[in-house]
Length: 376
Image (cartoon, rainbow, N blue to C red; front, top):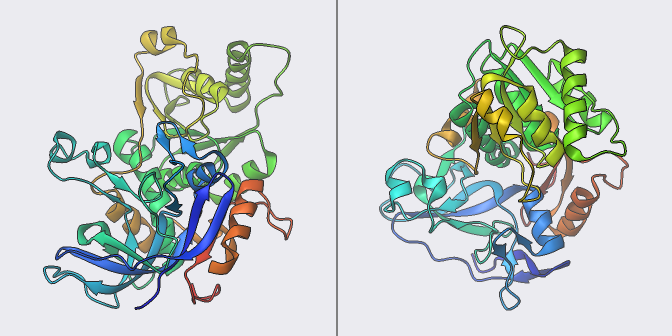
């Protein structure tokens, strides 16, 4: 273990391959040889903009990209008893302090001291090795591939939004705005727990078609934006959606839960108007920080409105269990695969939304150094 080639963001739109030191591990840590890494929209956002909200890539501090990863344990600390070298694992890429109020309350995703992979100033997982506390890696059942293991990270985001925060139950209905990977996984989770109706909403038709083939029971393509303000458009879109899909504000035809995975202001406004009286609205997508929301609708419908940030206790184990039981199929979402040395091409394809093969990108997976692309 003498080298650690890594894919490093040097500055906006500038990435390089370079050798990094192999991380040291403590007695409770493991060193994972990373085998598969999925590209997230946040990775691309850092590449293109150098920041997401208050998380900014400093001019004098570069960063290894990647955080959706799986691999094989190369070394375990002396106090690690539940894992050993050679175990196949999914990596939860956010180490928390374990002692602040949020951690002690069981909401460690809100820890102010979290060290999250590929979030400045912390390095990510797109290298040969990644060190992580042993309680943040999860052994993969034999029926899960390493590619599945990399996809557990975004699936856990969906589990957190739909199950933990949205509290969706069997025979309830959900509408998901945005048919990117996280939106699709929200639909998959809803289907897995027995939702009676799953409505997919997107402005791109081929995404809607995929959603319908994957997990959605219904799809809605919003009308085109005219010469109107966003609020006026969202009222018109909500009315069209209700009429076209026979949605009521109350009763068995109502939508129990709305999840927005797009971050679009008009989607947020439409979702608030679509969800049933007394329903739940969960915001998971990131867009402009300042959006107009009809607080009259929130108050008069007595909505529960929640923000969803990454994942917390129990989300990874539930995500793995859903895949292991065959209730969620991750394989159709992997549209493109790249070798480690083609990581630049993987980011370009994800950024453009289309690979060189002309097919739309849903999820691109990068293999680790010296790992074959077809080694799943």
